Length: 132
Image 1: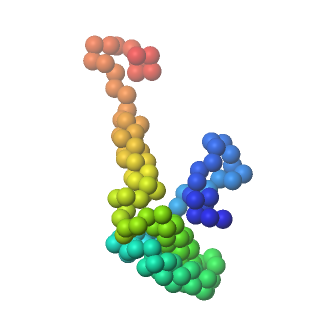
Image 2: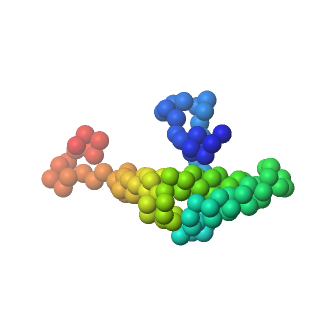
């Protein structure tokens, strides 16, 4: 399964191919890779990908460190793929996937405060809040 398939979300209500929410450790691994990759060109990222793949293949397949190693290898794969069509160095600010993640976080941050704010009755109204 490629990284894009793993991180893609399916139709709402489709539990057969539901992708679990990434753990904090996986998100931290992606951030480490992006920091490391910043300024790298394709051949440098490809070399880092080879190292990450070796680390992901070694050891346990179920431990937390194995999950993090796989997340790092998947992110290096994605970054290397991004750089394959790009002549310059890697910059997360120019990475459409990273920008999409940021847009989603920003959107959730805007919605979350509204969802947590209890509805207050209008001062001039005497009806219960459900009826206003």
